[in-house]
Image 1 (cartoon, helix red, strand yellow):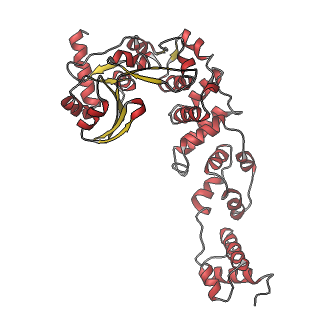
Image 2 (image 1 turned 30 degrees about the vertical axis):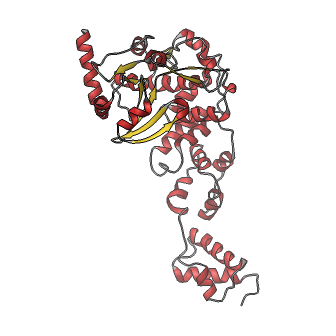
Image 3 (image 1 turned 45 degrees about the vertical axis):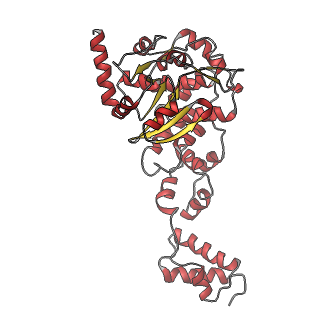
Length: 375
């Protein structure tokens, strides 16, 4: 392929995958570049919902020129733009340094996009394309070659020391793309110390990993690299949870990220006892499950509590046709007897012992009057 053919193919890919950037090219007055993962995915032919842009100049100025809703972040000289249903992160070119391992970076403005690329995590994320003029690949670190070879390579030897969460990102990319670690990168990664970053930052990165389609594989990689300890059978449990959350009745019941993270690395909790339970009646199932956290429920289901499917689809939403006002009208005073009557009637309805409003009211009155001397 000639250089001209290559430029043409980049232009075609850019127009096909990111038509929203036509407005950027039309209105930008300073050099602006598509950078990072957006370039990587464009070269892979993968669609991407959000993009990162770097401006050699005023990021907020470009954001306002686009005429879209803008949320600015002054500390890092960035702006988030919503444009035609797409999210654009617009940032001024910058360099950064780390005061100590695991610290947030100290950001300094730069006039060159190459300086901005040098602060990236892996070579495959350290590429750029200018949006003004003829599209071309800016690739100072050999990212295209590593992309073609299926390799993850860090840009410098202090990468994981500066930001150990890059090791978690490595697992995300390796699982998502099926890439391998370059040998020196693997050596450096195995020495990463995630304890040098805050628990909040670690959790945020692990949740991003858990959002990946190949999250169970990513957690397995982290464990193989010695960076996290999986709970017993954690990767397999995470895979089962992912399968459950991908179909009815569990789809949408709980945060997928939270559930997979708990399945993979969370401490064993009440879900183990819940999974071992064998309720004989629907009312027992509701009593066991109704006070549990949704994450515990899906973990217990993944551990074998098949009865939780019926809890979700049938028993959880069972409601009485009567309420407290019906009992008060029949002479039951407000107080414990009222609650006892409704609770006992719901139990009997779940177990198929009463059906219909009249039977419910009779059962509730009997339960409310029992033991309290209520006539």
